[in-house]
Each structure stands twice: as structure tokens, then as C-alpha cells.
Length: 569
Image 1: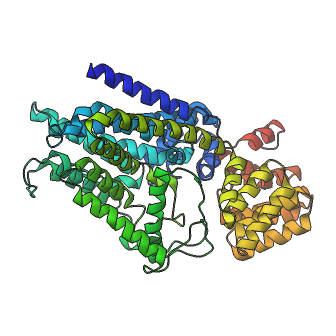
Image 2: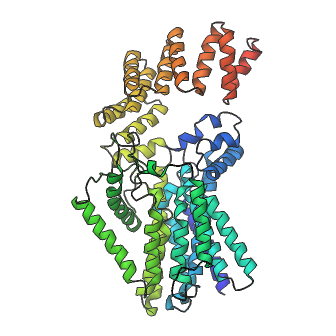
Image 3: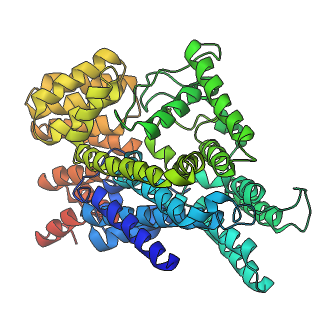
């Protein structure tokens, strides 16, 4: 009967997840997606090596994008389908890990273990439906987070299965080997997997150790953790540890650099915001205008730290009697520790996709609390409450996916919620320009420059909008200002050249195309446009090599046309 119930519950988890994300399949590419899907690898027959070079530290994730492009081109449906499959797989792994946890030596005789089928089901259901996961599922590029989570959870599950295996040792070590392989794959997907060795030790201490916990050389927990730790060290051998702590330069959302101290102190408030979003998932935002903390003794910073310390203390105090809650709390903080600590990984001090893996700890602690604190008579009430929460979250996820429909809907939402941050205005301007709404775009570019006057990208983008309106004098002024602020700005040189090209001032256009190519030797569009100008004026000596270079970079249209006309061989 339990097996049938489990299969039914897994099916419900899958169906509910599909319903929650059923309106995500037409959502467009967004934000960081442009680093991959609007690069030169999508304009021709690029190899897997070309794709991996975009994010060389994450080759497994890039391999999945390469395969997606091979089968689906730039049709977003295929990418969303894969992302949803990964999310459903993670929900299943969370169900499995929760069920295993309540079957471990230290939990199987607990009262809560009588309800392990329902606890596992509700934990998986809350995970698959929560709208905070939309940034890891609907946002295509954040597959890195969801795929790394899959390898992380699978590695831990195989380790636990190996520990619980009562048969021959060869099978146990086969499972341990699978755990190590999954860990390695996860590390080649995203850096969040680097906390896995500590998660294994934490899990072993919480659920598997029936004797006092001591360090022993032959302890397979330490052996597996040590092997994974060695892989981590080897994986990052080429990275200078000291460089990780350097300030993050401007350009990702703030007009100034962010120091290690500012990033660290800000994370206390950020983590509290994550917890609030788990409890009350409203006012979600891709681009938060989050105030930076400059001192530990700022009221907000100190208050946030004290509250987080209190939550950790509660995890310690509850450990003996309510172990499931304690483990959930420890998991949450451990899996957040890499992205929300002293390492300033980005100017984006808060990003919702960073909660994807920690979410397991939150939902396990939440479900555990309901089953611990509702007595046996009222368990049905606990189940009904959690089912209602999952139903509400399904609706919220469906609604949140509407915001991700396209660049305009997404950045309109960001501007509404972060009106005093320049980047949302800039990106909404880009979206409006793409819809040939240049006047509206210029309004947002102007607002972005009022907020951040030295924002080079905005000058470049506003220059494009002016050029589209035929206001070339204003466009040239903006390109000049962009280059003044950012002398190595190849895009601004290219756009300036393209504007001269449209004015039939070909010699000036070539000069700016030359500058763009000097700064970026693989600037595809500059080679194409310069090649067109040269071939148009009968200069085959330079035009043909430009066409050949463009073909080598993935676009052979100009070369084929030139060959058809007999201009190039």
C-alpha cells in the first residue's frame, strides 16, 4: 500500500509542478541569457568547445545548452522543457531524500517517522510549487543552479544509500563511487556544490551516527568527503584564493565598487529577506535595489545578525528533540554560505535563484515543524494547511511566470519595484527599442542617467535610440560620451560606425569599424559591415578577407553572396 501511495504522491508532485509552470514555455530569453544565446555560437555551426569557452568553469551546464541549441535552435520551448524536467527531478530527489532521512537509524523509531510518506510528499510538493524557484526554472540561464542542485542532491542520496546498504561492501562502494562522480559533475556545473563535503558530514552526524561522533581514518564519511574536497581543490587550482576577496567593480547594478566588508554585512539582511520570501512570496524582483550595509553596528545589520543568530541557536537547542527541524536550519545556512558570506561574488548582492538549493532545508524544517507540533489527532489539519499553502504557491508561481513572458514585461516589473535603480530603466529601454518604441526607450535611458550619470552602457543604448529616430547628432554625442567613460567600448565604436554607414559616410564608418575590431578581434558584425562596405566599393582585397573572417566566426552569408557575384573565390 505504501508503494502505491508513494507512486501516487510522486505523480501528484509532477502534475502540480507541470501546472505551475505550464505558462512558462513561451517566456523569452532574458538578461544573462544574452551572454549565451545572442553570442556568435548561435550564428553558425559552433563546436561544443566554442560553447564551453563562454563559461569555461561550468562545462556541464554549457554542454546541456549546446545540446538544446543542436535540437531546438533558438526556440525557447525546448530550453524551458529541459529546465522543467530538471526541476521535477529535483522535487523527486527531495521526496526521496526526505523519505530516506526518516528511514535512517536515528529517525526510524521516532513518532514522525510513522508519517514519512506524507512528510516526504509535502516537502517535495512545497519545493516544486514555490514561486521563489521561478528564477531557477523560468530564467533559462539559471539552469546552472537547478542542474547543480540535481547533482548535489543525487550525490548525497547515493552516499546515504551506500551507508544504509546492508548487503556486500562492493555495492556500498559502488554507490559511494556514484556519489563522487555526481559531486564532480556538480562542481563542473556551478560552484555551489563546493559545500557538499560539509553537507555529507552534517547529514551523517544528524541521522546516521548511532555512536559518539569521532574522527576515524577508516570512516567512509570522512573518506568520501575528503575525496570530494580534493576534487574541489583540484577544480580551483588555477584560481588565486586571495583574488576572491577583492572588491567587485562597478557595472552590475551599482555605480561604485562593493568591498568584501560591505558584501558580508549586507548578507545578514539579504538572508532575512530570503526567509521572508519563503514565508510570504510577494514583491519578487529580478533586480532588487537593495541597500548596502557599511558597518556591523548599523541598526538593520545588527538586528538581522541577531535574528539569524537566534535561528541558528534554535537549531542547536531543538536538535535532540526535533532533529528534522534542526537539520533543515543547518542545511539552509550551509548551502547559502558560499554565495551569502564574506566572498563578494557579484554586485548582485541578492538573487532569488541562490535560494534554490537552500530551499530544501526550509521546506523540510517547515513540514517537520507541522508534524512535530500538531499532535496525532490534528495531523490531518497540518496536512490540509500545507496542501493549501502548496495550492496558493502554485497560483503565485503561475502568476510570476507571466512577468517572465518577455523583456518588456520583466523589466517593467523591475522598474516598478526598483524605480531608483539605473539598470532596470536601462534594460527596459533596450526592450522598448527592440519593439521600435525609441521615444519611450529614451525616457527610461534619461531616467537611468539621472540616477547614475556615468553609466556608459546607457549612453551607448540611448545613442542607438537617437540613431533609430534619425537624430544622428545626438547619437554621436552619446557614443562619444560612452567611449569617454569606457575607452575600450567596442560596441560603442561599432554603433558609431553603423550610424555613419546609414548616412552613407563610408570612410568614417570604416574607421569606427576598425576601432571596434581592434578592441575585439572577433567582432562578427563589424567584419560583416566592413566587408559589405569594401565589397560595395570594389575593394575585394579587404572585403573578401572580412567575409571569410565572418564565416569563420559563424556567419557565411556575406561570403556566399560575394562568391555568387564572383567577387570572392
